Image (cartoon, rainbow, N blue to C red):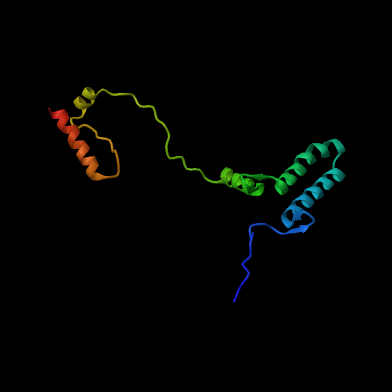
Length: 134
């Protein structure tokens, strides 16, 4: 038996002329909001507010950013701005201390961690202690 496998499943169907359903809804929604602004506000104020709003809806309908619909970009931006942000690293100013002064105060030298491997850490600290004892 042969089955026909659908091709181009990522392409949306054109329903209203050359517009997809989403594009038609964005354009008609922008036109409706523009009409409501025009009828309810003075002309100058309606143009001042209406042109950016209608332009935003037209951008939602037709513009693609990096091959993806602009609505995905807007959604990602809203999520980013309202999400809780975790800052892991903040630079703190530290005063440099000479090695001789730090050894006088504390006989054991602090060995910073180089990696998560305990074996590497141990060999590095042994090498440092061996050089200091010579």
